[in-house]
Image 1: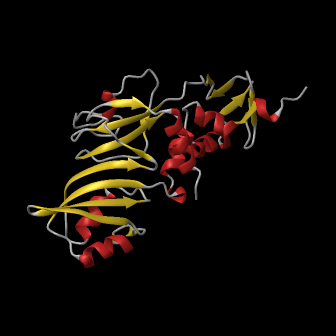
Image 2: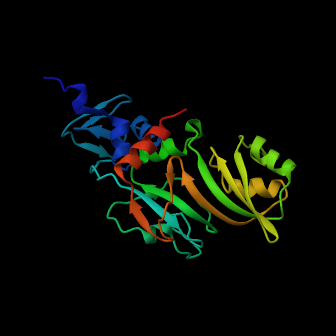
Image 3: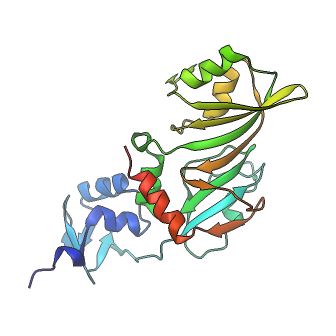
Length: 243
């Protein structure tokens, strides 16, 4: 008897959920003929029945436990998996057997909320600009931005890789020699908030991500990691399905 739809899963989704690659990366592996299902080369749209053996380049794919973590990243840690300069890595702060990777990146001098997972499909959707998942930062900038600078940040700033999308910007407080801003963006360009603020003449001195989509740091201590709660994961999936 044929497998019912409920007992099968699309091949690219199976690979993504197994931590092999993002769904897009899985599509590339399938297109190159490197994936088999019970010895048969997989095709785009192939379904994986329950209990089937899937291989990539001849090696069986082990179905991993899905891990979803939130870390309060300290300043000085890099989000790359290796670093030629020998700087500390965020993965050194994670104590799980599964190989998790950061969802997006924070530069070494930026602290705050960082998500890590082995769910390649969810990570891809969270990072794709089409879904517009919001990221909120607390920025301490040098100088006191006026209404014109704040309006530019809100409406979009011209950078060397194009104009940024509109952002939500709030002036939280004036400080000695600077100001505290809350900036929410939907994109994920490299060092985007720092570049935006520099472009309007107010360079960032301190930067912390305080929210990713519906999730906030709460009381999570610096350098501390915890698993997402079921309702947080559901909210995150809902945010990643938008757009």
